[in-house]
Length: 181
Image (cartoon, rainbow, N blue to C red; front, side):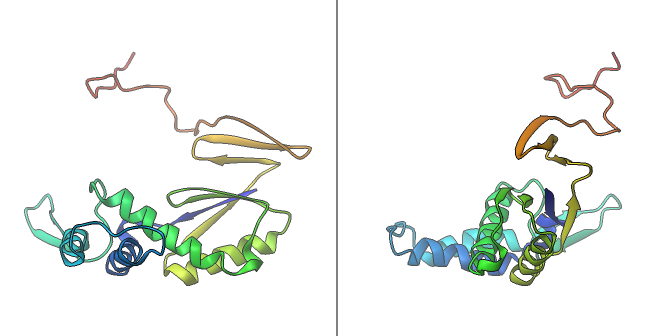
């Protein structure tokens, strides 16, 4: 068991390339009817993700020219589209298929008997995306993935809640306040 994760996904997404990929998928898909909105209008609407102005605490205005701003309403859509295209290209190579492959946006859980396959998959994902991927291997048959503790036991997976050592067992209420009690 291992997991892969993109380093700084949202701010590293090649947005211009991703917008072109989305437009190609939407307007050139062999099985789907294109939307009634003209391609150039949708392109202008999506291209707004390529430049994100923000003001720093000192008051200076900056523009982020690539990547997607954290919290952008289109951020998750663009990230998912980008990662899906990368996976599509990666899995064209039959050498990277594993026994189990699960993904949530850029967090990937993989189970395979080959340690070399994990590195091959990481290299292929990086090559196809231009993004940097980290690898975290299991420890003693246990692996934490998205706050789920996965244990491998005689060919079966047993899951439970994983709490990080920094967890203070406090929850926010509906007012967005974390009480000390």
